[in-house]
Every structure is written in C-alpha cells, then in structure tokens.
Image (cartoon, rainbow, N blue to C red; front, side, top):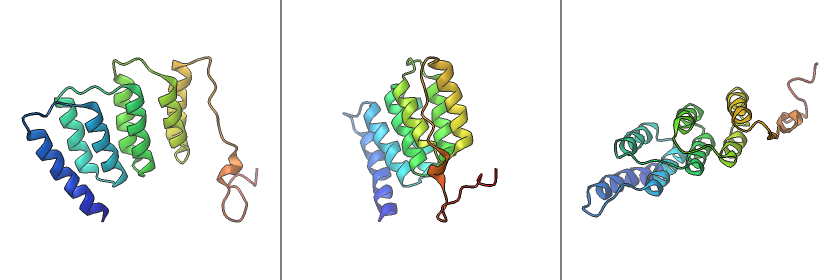
Length: 149
C-alpha cells in the first residue's frame, strides 16, 4: 500500500507543478519530502529537493527541523544529515527548537548526535542539551553494553 501511495503522490506532484496556477510553496515541498521520507523513497526525495532549489524555495528553520526529523524517523540518517547541512547554510537565523527536535531524533545515532550537539552548543552557548540516561538503551536482558565498566 505504501508504494502505491507514494507512486500516486509523485505522479500528482508532477501534475500539480505543470498547472498554470502553480506557485512554488514551502509547505507543498515540506509535505512531499516528509511523505517520501516516511516511505524511504530516496531517489524521489532527491528529485523533489533539486526541484525546490531550482525554484528557489527557502525553508524556515522549523520546516528544516521537521524534514530532518522525518528522515531520521524514516531510518534515513544520511539523507537527514544532508538536509541538516542545508539548514546550517540557510540564510534564515538559527533557532534552538528545530535543533532540539533534530537532537531527539538523533538518539539512535549517537555519533551524528554529537556533531549536531556540538553545533547547537556553538550556536546557543548558554543552553543545555538533555542527554538521556544510558540505561534508556538497555537491551532486553536489562544489561547495557557498558555494564562491564
């Protein structure tokens, strides 16, 4: 069902963009990218991303945060970090909330989370980043990987 939905969505995307009334819209692209990310449609996502850049659609920081989080939740950390780098280059001034949303989504990816955490602390030096206790990631036997320490 997911494949069928995404296939129809990409066809609809192509039709809408050809209509005379169509104007580039941040929310249109946000929704497309989030849907494609949830369905792990990497190639289609890259195409949509290139289209929005060509149409000079600019995302605000909250929208960037939502999209990065959708990619993380979809199990696409590499693509999420590509969009995160676009967010860092954005002319829109950084806001702390989108970074917090991204940091939460990066919990399963500790090495990527450290990079974003460093960026966050550099941009917002007086702020604190919540780090969950390590036992949050215990395996099913109740042991952590670092229990031997």
